[in-house]
Length: 243
Image (cartoon, rainbow, N blue to C red; front, side, top):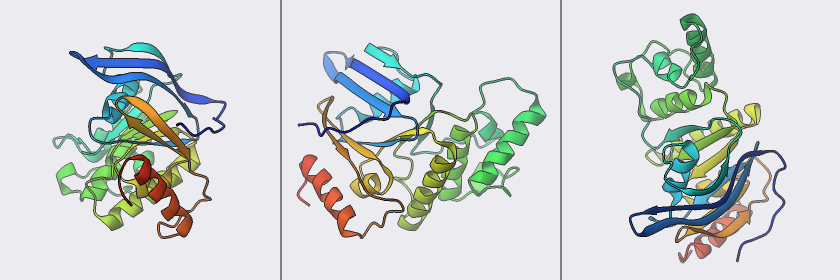
């Protein structure tokens, strides 16, 4: 049964009756979901539950679906792999996130400003292959943020990072979210990450939203706090995993 909660009034995305199939297999089966501006929503579920498919639909990377999809502004995406082009320097990779055709100097200046925001101010002219894993992911997030989106879509962007780098990236995301107020949909397999970051956790099962759990904890959140552990245990139970 879905938990009830009060939703934000200014949506970054609103989905109603979303359905998508591959061949005869229904992957998304009547999804209703709203993501508010300034809200972080964690999307959880077992492999094959439809998480990445839903994110791809929201990103405009898949249009073979039915239902109502309302996204006022163009969303941006960061994936688990940074997907930086190795033949372009870091700033030029970030500029790829700009859809407009502003003059080259303006594009470079904006990319450089966003790189400074993510802690890569000295890496604008660097080549992607010289960056560490955490630095590469910072550059990918800069590319997603340079267009100043209302909705940021994150597909397990921290999953391949070591534990300390992942915590650093959590802090970075929360700082940027606090500064810019964009909505976030975070696809993750990590319930501790969901509890650390999200205002609400949504659990998909068989292409449907099975549960919505508001995470009512003040920020900053400590992973080892008893309250965080209780939320993590509840999410694991809803996912069918023994805590």
